[in-house]
Structure formats: structure tokens, C-alpha cells
Image (tube, rainbow, N blue to C red):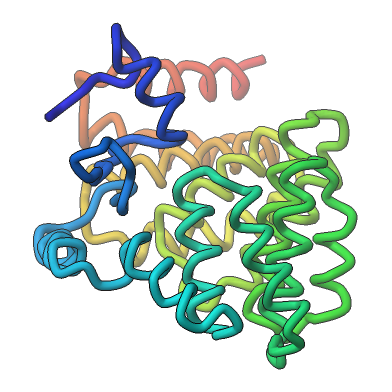
Length: 267
């Protein structure tokens, strides 16, 4: 059954199942109880793999709960349950699973400790414990996750752009496999904040060089032009935006950007 979560009965169902993003596919039993979900777009092959997993009952909520009842101290089950509850927008249950791991003393890698800090921070919207974790554990794979979450808290607060920008730089530097879209998003945000412009220019240039899709590539070229304009390099900004106008002459935004840069040059 397909439901629009922003209209009619879909609004209440979205609240009932804690839907935070679209698309979300919820799998429920005959009693209407959720057994699993798929969040976000997936290419066909991984999507079918997930469907087969859920259909087989592997790592679904009922299967994990059954395993938990048989062995309540098993680290892998507790952690999978925590992640499952997190995806289902049930932070209280997720935190209980994490606390159970900590109580058992089986958190040798510090994974549960991190998620305990993360879940607490999501309740308080306080970035400081997450930043402290990243500073204390710079080599942990969770360090970048902590910094990214902290950056979003600071952004939503909206009162310290320099702090947000500094955190965002640390996030990007910590990404092992950044993709062009991610780097373009970072570069555009730096242009808005007028922070770390040289670093942002370097990253968006890499994004342009490594983006195979021409439409996306010219979106990134627009970002580069915006950065150059903010840096006072107006001639270069015009040269870049002209590439975008040539690529899509009907797109009014590119023409407005070109006009903006030309006005800056003539003023």
C-alpha cells in the first residue's frame, strides 16, 4: 500500500511509525506491528537483496528479539537491535540496548560507548560531548560521525557560523571516500558562510574533475563560480559561469548568476 505521508491519513501513519525521511517502506505483520523497514532510495539490486532478507526473516525485529530472549547478553544481537530501533525512530529502546552492552562489559571496541554519547546528544542537541569524543578518539571510525552530527546541531542553532564551518572542514577531512556531490555541498555551504574558501575551492574542483554526469558537473561549476566571486576573483567567476550558460542556455538561474557577476565586475 502506497501512502503520501504528508496528506490525509498518511500524516498520522507517519507519526505512528516515526517516518523521518522519504521514501520509507515499512513492513508490518497482520497486527500492524512493524517488523522492518527500508529507508531511502536504493538501486534495484541492493533493494531486491533487502527485500529477500526481510522476506526470509533474517535480522528483522522479531528475529532479533527472539535471539535476544535466548541470549540477552550477546553483543552482536544487542547492537543490531540498537541500530534497528534507531532506524525505527525509537531512541529510548536503542539506548536501552546500548546500556545493556555497557552493563555487560563487552564493549571492547568502544562502539556502544560512542552510541550512548550519540543518543544522549540527540536528546539534548548538545554538540560538546560529540566533539569531545572525536578529540579523544581521532583514529576511531566513529570520530567523523560524531563531528558530522555535532556540525548539524551547530548549524541548526544558527548562532556560530565559524564553529559550524570549522566542524564541517574536520568532517570532510575525515571522510575516507568523499564523493563529488558531498564535496559540492560542502563547498556551497562554505560560500554561504564565507569560510575556508580556498579549501572549498580545492574540493569543488576535485568534484568537477571526478563527476561523470554533465548536469551535475555544471552544478558544481556554478558552485566554483560562486566561490570565486566571494573571493573577489570575478573574472574567473564569469569564465566559469559562462560554461554553465553554454551548457544549459534556458536555465534562468545560470543567467542570473552571470548577470550578478557582471554587475560586480562593473561596479
